[in-house]
Length: 429
Image (cartoon, rainbow, N blue to C red):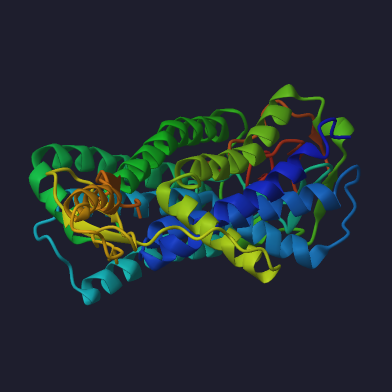
C-alpha cells in the first residue's frame, strides 16, 4: 500500500491543469516547441494520475485496453519530453544566430513543421521500434499501474534505450551554440526582439533557463539509467522475433509487498513518476506568473465577473507614445487622458460695478486657472512579455513467471523490464 496516497494523484492532476494554462498565448505566438512540451507533460501527468488511482492497493488487470494505450504513451513520453526540449533549444539558437530582423509567414510555418516532425515524429517512431524488443504485453505494479516491458538484448539499445540520452546530447549542443551566438550577435538579437511582438527578452531568457535546468537533470538521469541497463542485469542474445515475443500475452502482476522490498526499486518508481510533476511545476513557475499570464488572468476574471453580474472597476483610458530606450524590452510613456485636463472652464461673471470689476475678475481668473491645469506626471511602463531514460530498478527479487527464462522483479521508469532488463524510460527533465 502506498503510504503517500493520495498525494501523487492530487499533485499530478493539479500539475496537469497548471501546465496547460499558458498554452493559448504560446499557441498564438507560434511557439510550437513550447506547446509540444506542455502537451506531453500534461499527458504524462494525467496518465500516471489515472494509473495510480485505478491500481491503488491492487494489481488486478481491470482495464486491458487502457493499459495498451497507457503503455504506448509511456514509451513515447520517454523521448517526447527530451524532443520538445530539443525543439526549444533549436528555436533559441535560431533566434540568437538570426541573420535578418524579420521573418516571413512561410518561414514561420516551415519552422513549425520541423518542430512537429521532431516533437511528434520521434515519439511515434519510438513507439513503433520499441515493439520489436517488447518482451510481452505489459506488467501491472500495485500502486503504480501498468507499464511497458523491454527485453534486455543488444538490439534494444539502438532501437529504444539510447534514444533519450542521444536527444539530450544534441539538445546540449544547441544550448552551447545558443550561448556563443548570443554573445557574438547581441545587437542583431535586440533588433530581432524589437521587430517581433510575440517574443520578448524576458520570455527568451525564461525559455533558456527552463531548457538549461532540464539538461542539468536530463543527461545525468539518462546516463545513469543506461549504466543500470548494461551492468545491473544480464544482456540476453538476440535469437529472433519468435524468441523475443514468446508468451506475448503474458501479463505479470507485482504486489507492492514484494517490489517494495527493494529500496532502489522504490526510489526508481517514485523518482520516475514525480519527475513529470516536477517538470510541470517548473514550467508553470517560469511562465505562469509572467506579465502576459497576469494579463490573461485578469481578462478571464473580468469575463467571469461580468457573467455573474459583478462589474469590475474600469481602468482609465490611456494614450501611449512608443519610445525606445535602447533596451531589449520595448518601453512606452503612458499619459492618462482626463476629461478636464487641458481645457479652461468658461466663467460667466455677474455684472460688477466699475469700482470692483478689475479686482474681482483678477481674483476669479487666478482661481480658475489654478483648477484648470493639474499637472500630471508621465509614467513609464514596460510592455508585457508576451520527465526517457527509464532507469531500471536494480536488486529486485527474481520471480519465475514464464518458462521462457527467469524474470527478475525489477522495472524501470517508462518501460519496465522484461526478462531481467532494466527499462530506460525515465521522464527526461
